[in-house]
Amino acid sequence: MVVVTLDVAEWKSKYPQYNALTNQQVEDLFYAATTYLENTPQCVISDEEKRKYFLYLLTAHIAYLFYVDANGDGGVTGMVGRLTSATEGSVSVGSSMANVPFNAEFFLQSPYGFMFWQATKVYRMGFYRGRRR
Picture 1 (cartoon, rainbow, N blue to C red):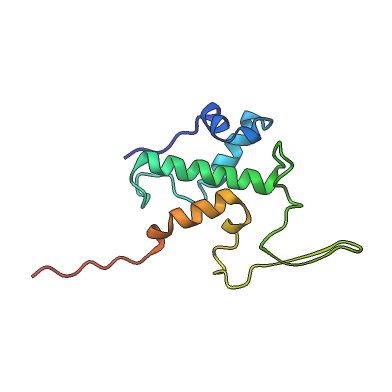
Picture 2 (cartoon, helix red, strand yellow):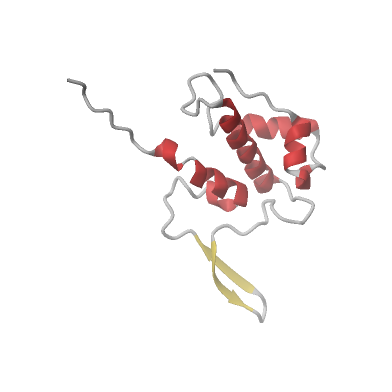
């Protein structure tokens, strides 16, 4: 089993909305992604292509949190949570993260993080291995 290596051109082709980011910015985002998903031979996700997919998703998630994409989505001004209320006069919007496990909140702030959270559910479950007789 090997570690996943970032291919910036490949990542940008998968997430073209972030093409304006420099290679160094993408590399920094990928490094940040590896703090959320281990990128070592000991990683619970042993399939290299699957781990790469997840790390690329995490990189896009973090890009969404820190940078606005070509469509104006993302960045620190984005709303977090589900829309709970809206007002028109003097504009007012409310959101909530109710009924969300506290450890999921970070991931549910972008479509990429949400996809990562759902797809990696199987890796967060406990495993039971019965004793052989």
